[in-house]
Image (tube, rainbow, N blue to C red):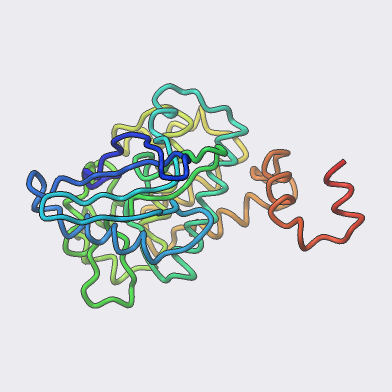
Length: 270
């Protein structure tokens, strides 16, 4: 995860099932300890199907360990350009649903949306982690305004308003603003295989044309005029939208199988 909470290895639990272990070296990263502890606390309390599932946590004087469901970093696949357009859209759809929950339902700002915060589950789903800076707008002692600059690669992914006015400006803008901008950068990176600076974001050749208009609205320089990820999700789900793909349709139908009438269930299973 971004705050030097490193994915160490895959190990077996007592029941024989595999899990992943994340570790944070307190001695080597004392300045980032508040971020690591915030990640630990948020992962314990934030429950959503699209969030990394935590199995257990341990904190000692020198290390923080987090055991999760078995995961692999999204960044591996992005750098190798091994993702198809269909699976990339499915993954972005999953993260958009999770971010909608974080921004709207949990009234929070993730603050660190990028490939390093996203992981593949064993079923191939994209799961959101990297909660180092996750901050509720209702918290007086929110981590993000104070420690946002300590997130690795903060400068490269920083929203324009934060670059100009510092992290304190997030209190004056919509809750979704920073995450929406970072989600736009994420779209660029997963379709291009890398991201170095904001100067690249206007190069949309590798991004599906159906996404172009909404993608540009996510990157609006004005945070108050910027499209939210929730709105992006709604745009993609419209008839003929970029999220109207067979893979997304099937997974959505399976998720809602219990709500369907018998005839609809039989049709889906056929």
